[in-house]
Length: 250
Picture 1 (cartoon, rainbow, N blue to C red):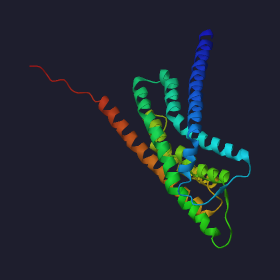
Picture 2 (picture 1 turned 30 degrees about the horizontal axis):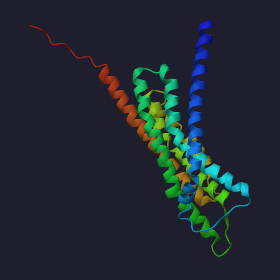
Picture 3 (picture 1 turned 90 degrees about the vertical axis):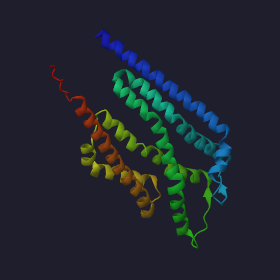
Picture 4 (picture 1 turned 45 degrees about the horizontal axis):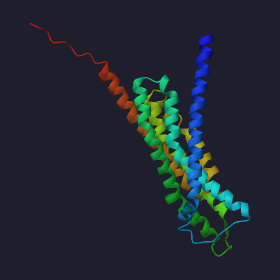
């Protein structure tokens, strides 16, 4: 009983250490991003040829912290993934440790890919569609806060959702899930992804469809990758258990 308590205390202490390192990394990245926040701001509005309004002096600071926070979150992803790996490492086999470590760069890469897809592909389509609805009908005026919230709502979720294929591959490689499980869960997964799409997009059917389509494709891509990993895993297990007959000596 005493050994179990010591083990629990050790795990909690290790978890606390990893969380503190991750939090400190986020704070450092937050301050670093805030130093260059005006440059980031100018880059984000470079193709938006409209004036952005603020409703009060504090809105400017809120917007800068919003931009800095998202930038810091993106920069903290690889560190957070590495700290997570260090925490679970003692409970993994040597093979599982190598597999987990190999996935860390992929998490950051896919997160950036998701942000890029949301910002460069989805955002202009949705924005132009919404502006076309008001053309000749309304005089549109954007506040900076709502504009950047609109960008974040379309980009940040995709940064996280693009991790799904890598997570599916990793969980398949260590035996937590398999392609059969993902195929059986397709209906409920589609339903949840549809809810996510409705939640993160403006309240119109066209925007919902523009997001739902890529999310469904992403899930099917995850199933395909899981099948490949599972098939290779089975082949390797079969080859490892193959008994090579010894040659008879004359």
